Image: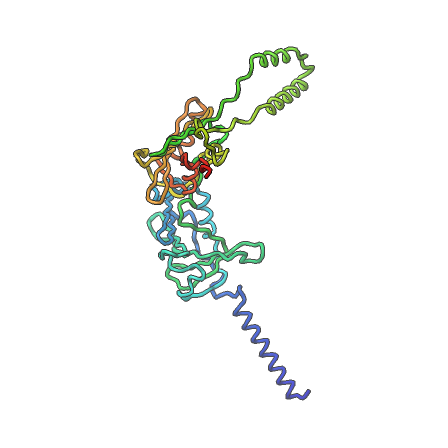
Length: 385
């Protein structure tokens, strides 16, 4: 090889290495700008926050601090799940800017960092306000990048500060929502379905439906006497240990003999000659009313009444009685509850439910409303052609 060729090849090799370095720097996902490693909100402390607002398109939630907790300011003070507030403020406090991204507005949408006010926006605006009404921060939250730190590790989130064109990948997972249901305890009514003894459903313009759980057969007097005789005939236990063992075995035997609760059944329904589409429809209804989640909530001045209101009355054995009232408001289904109880245990259970539901009306999913408000025609098989 001539010296001239050697110099030429060396120059080509050096150029190739330089090109590779430039290419790597341009494409390496962890190349950072001069501000990388700084806090997203320098000096921020969650204790400063008196109000937290999240906006996305036409949706908004405003959370207001009340002592050590938060309430929904734009929902008349409905209680917030404080753990969900911490899951947002905590990551915001420690968030660091890891990777600089685009500063061009036309490219924001790719990171879901476009203007949050747009009706179809996927971005969310988080505004933090202090006790004196001062704005602590306004941050646009974008989409998350899964496994930002390698396979099986935590995700990062794209962010940008309002008033700053630069976008960033932050090193925290920020799941922020402008939906009410994502800030509260969504299950507002829970009943033990196997303790439901009766259900009555009244829909305006429809025949009422009644559901009952048959009472277990009464114990025969002879069986009771025989059982007592056998007990009397037993020899006294030799010692306390043996007596305890016998008592435990007797309890386990009795529990094993205890039959499961009778299945709920429709009263005087279906009509003679008709068949139910689902033999377990009564139990299905019981399960539908035993656990209900909300999508939204609003203050209620008085229990709704009138032609557009359907009523569901649920009676629990040795428990409270809950009366649900459902109505339509546009495309939304709203439900309110009045609960009463007789006896110490039933009153206590009623008070616990009332503490969560009194004076509130809850928007529930359409599928749940349809599962509860069954008409007779919904339950019967079509006649054979």
